[in-house]
Every structure is written in structure tokens, then in C-alpha cells.
Length: 352
Image 1 (spheres, rainbow, N blue to C red):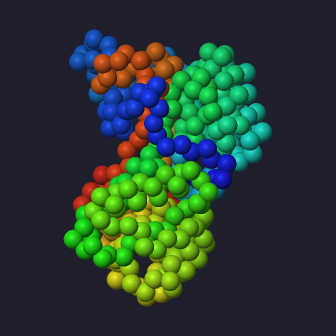
Image 2 (image 1 turned 60 degrees about the vertical axis):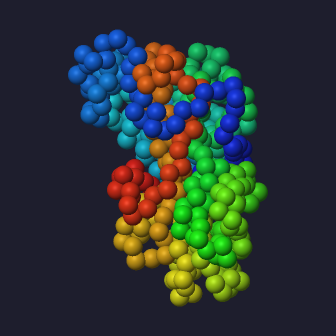
Image 3 (image 1 turned 180 degrees about the horizontal axis):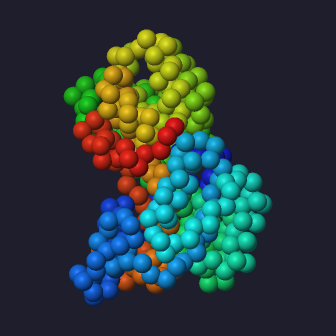
């Protein structure tokens, strides 16, 4: 999960940009050209659109923070895997760093090298805005991933997860299980409380619970780490002798949360996770723990950024839109993964 105190996460919406769901992006990486039906496909990913036919080779620079937890590691792995599907993409991956000056230098190198596009997940969106503007002014399209820049002119397109939507999805699932129990006890294990992303997730959760007459009875906050998750969950379990449902915001910290639950010998409730790790999904498949669902915060955002960068550099667009331009903003969905649909998501999940 993408979380640092520097992260200037904002809840979705800007009325000046185009919002497109993840399904549109995945299905929609197809051409607007009139000869779509005549295409034989290509690109090595079994897609069937002319956009996936091999075109002019493009060089894409990629920079992201250090892979210091599972979600961030999954971001870079997914970007590499997506680029490998296309023989006309050369992906230059800068070493992951949490040092702002180093990341700025990486982008400056991409500019000097004259890459065709840049996919950038900034450690600090505000701090990387000037160099992203420099790239754009040099005619290099920038795809901003996950943490937004301060200026709308700093990126040609932006790919975001949906933190408020995660909370709504988790709360809606809890309501589906407990909606007929008005006295049900609901608990929440948040991430870092000072971050807007945590606040957005909690607000979405509260809003969804309110729709079925429930609320959060017990709440603690962790720090997106295994250790902090275990400590926060231990405190929660000591304070609440009876719980019906828990939403844990993050599957990386969820490893510690599950350890605390096991140590306490508690199993009277069900738990919903967050972010969508492969570990969590395997536990859901096994069906032998309190973890019954998780809400996805896609670790494939940079992979989508690579796809968009390729389309922009090759002057292509999305055929499933009437609009002939690549959208300026794409907000990915936050679906709930349960034992019924886990097979659809586990292959693209990250390891905690």
C-alpha cells in the first residue's frame, strides 16, 4: 500500500478532468483506428486490438519510491511485467528511492536522455512537481501515478486508486453481512491517521455503515507495518471483549493483525482487509481464518501508466471512448474480493 507521511493524497474528483473506471482502461487499450477489425493483434499479451500491434519502439522512463513494503514492490514488478509484453517498449527503471533529490535527478536524466514518456510515482508529489513540469515543457508526456502533483500541467495523464471508495466497499460488505443486526459491534484498524488517504478510507467506511444503521464502535490506528498492525490489534482486542466485524485498512499491516488475533484466541468476528495482497487472498481461499474479504487498492497502477505512456508516445488512444484523446485522469475501482471471486484477482496481487 502506498503510504508515507509525505504523501499528498487527495480524494478523487476534479470536475475539470475525465474519470474513467479501471475496466475501461483494461478493456479500452484499443485503437480508434478504422481498421480495428482487420487487426491480428500482437504485442505478446493476447490482446486483440490494433493498439497492441507492434509499432515504433518507444523509450519509457520509470521512477518510484523504494520497495520498502509489499504494495510498493508490487508496483514496480507490475510495471516491468507490463513493459515486457511489448517488444516495442524499452522501459528504463530507475532505482527506487525515498530521497526526493535523487528522484528529481532521475527524472532530469530521463529528460536529458530524450525518453519518449515518463511514468512517475513520486515519493512526494509536491516536491516532484517542478521537474515533472520541466519534462512536460520539453515535450515529454508524464504519467503521474498514485500520488498527485500540485499542478495539473505537470502530467499529461494521472492514474489513481480510490481511497474513499475502499472505505465504501468495506462498509458495504460489512452491511451485507450484519445489516440485520442493529447492535453489531464494528471495529476499524486504520493506517497512519495523519494521512489524507487514511482519513478518506475512514470517511468512506463510516458513510457506508451509516446506510445500514451501523457505525464504528472501536477504532485504532497502525502505521502500515506488520509490527504496528500487531500492536494496534492487540490493543483493540483487549479493549473490545465482543466484536462482530473488523475492517483493517492494509494487508501489509494485516499480517500483524492476524497474528494478534491468533495469539488472543479470538474468532467470534469476521475481518475485511485492504489493498489486496496475495497473502490475504490465499487466506480467503483457504477459508480457515477470520479474514473473509479484502478491498483492492491496485498495485497495477504503474502498469496501467506504462500502457498509457506507450499509447501516448505512439499517438494512439482508447477505442472504447468516443473521445479520441487519452483521458487526463483515471480512477481505478476498489472491488471487494471474497472466496467467490478471488480467482479473478489473485494473479495480479502483490506479496505482503
